[in-house]
Image (cartoon, one colour):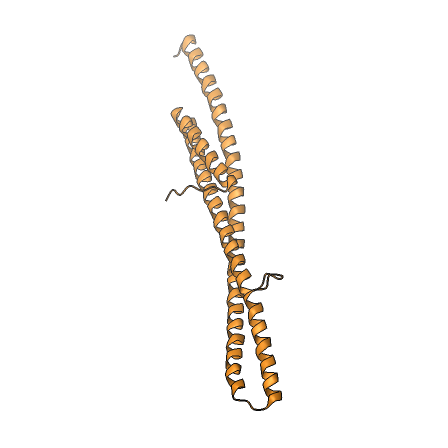
Amino acid sequence: MAGPHENMEHAEHAQHASHSNKRVALMIAIIALFLAFSETLGKSAQTAGIGYNVEASNLWAFFQAKTIRRTLVETAAQEMKVSVAGQTDEALKAAMNKQIDDWIKTGARYRTEPETREGSVELMARAKEAEHNRDAALEKYHNYEFASAAFQIGIVLCSATVITGMIVLTYLAGGLVVIGLGFMVLGLMGLHIHLF
């Protein structure tokens, strides 16, 4: 049987372990909070990236349609220019020249239309901008994913500390929290580190 001195030692040890476990539990709660933020920010960045990708695809499709239309009217104008040379009827020649001018103007409008930003030149610029925004959003998403992974591993290490009593695992978890916060800051600032 254990003596009073040993019982007291066990009680002190249990009290110390309980106090230590409370600190580890608090650390787990804080890491879980950071994890929630990184997951939310990551999902938002991923959704934005998908939206910009759809926008870029739509703009490129519109660009292709404008390019095809422009090519058709320019080809028609060139074909009619050849046909005009062989015409003897002045009224028909005038009507054909008017149609050629209309097609040339339409082709020029299909090429560039700054007021509506729907000419092929403007559509290309808009599509490239959407692609850039998509890439930036996905870079943010990857930063948040790395942060989430660091926080999740930190939670596992803290949980292992409670079971094993190895405090060094808590210090490793703290290091991972710092790394995770670093990736969150990179995501918030729109910066990216190429790890792979």
